[in-house]
Image (cartoon, rainbow, N blue to C red):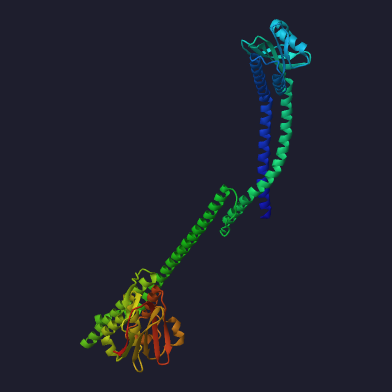
Length: 510
């Protein structure tokens, strides 16, 4: 990992250095090529302008008749030195009016040749005309004495004086060569120094880029904890911000995908569970219906064959068939209800209602059953107790608890119903006196078709499904339920979400 980071670091630096050196060499080459091709022309153009400016000043001085004054001598020297020119001015009698060079004789002869001996100039000096006007001619000529080219301007001033201005071309050519040499030397030095500075700067530039690369590498391995919080160029900061946002988005998306995957896994497990419940349901139904079907079939065959022809026997046979058919009908209905609850196909409607009123109404409707069982029912509850739940399913829970208590009633035959308000829930409990449930049977009470006393259950027509329905309903509420053994009886309880309301406590015997 460290080797990769070091490799990336030096790769970025070397790329920066390579691009910089290549660019600088290309720029240096272009400068050299431009100097070689155009610097001489530019110098010549400047020289031409300098000679022409000098000509204008001499013409103005001649017009003002100040050529031989002391004040103009200073101007004369400054112009000649500044432009590196040699000047000679002759009057109409070919006498020297002003001369800047020591070799006045050569300048005079050159001026005379320009005016009166053009053939000699063309033969010996190979002149090249640059510009030609009425009063002057500008040309480039070769000096055979020293082998140097000169820029010359000769002609007549406005006052009639003849003049010759010349400047050597050698200085221009030498300046171009010096400039090119200096450019090469300075360029090499700049490239070396620039490479060192660039190496440092590339390090500073590459550090945030390497940090971003490391963050992206961690993101590739689903590590989204690393975030970019450094500084750098504006573009790098924007890139870092975007990578941070991308990291958060990817983390959120992956989290959503994992959640969806878990949901899908749960759906698959739920489907498998439903299939298992369906198979179990069919198995249990076929098992539980074998006995009543066999009884119905047996008594029906007895009636058909006329085993007992007396009316009392036939009536007994018919009563058994009707009773077993009713039990089968009740069991099938309860099995269908349980199957809907377990598969989640039953809709839970959460609503606010008075639990105490629900219990009282049910006890009133079950008054005949209570009297037949000889039970003493006691209700301990506040006047109004509001809860959040499915009222129909809560009534189903209470009905199963209460009928279970009636069927297992013994001893003092007391059924004690309590509605107790707790901090967040309301507990509904149903206690009946009688034999406690064997300890080994307690974990199995909520299983389908489990019967503690099969003979007694058969006696009152129990199917072993009631408590399974209670379990499925309470699981759909996501609330607690259970059973408590006492020496003199058993208590079943269930809790529901509490709804605060004003109430008064009452206790009465039904």
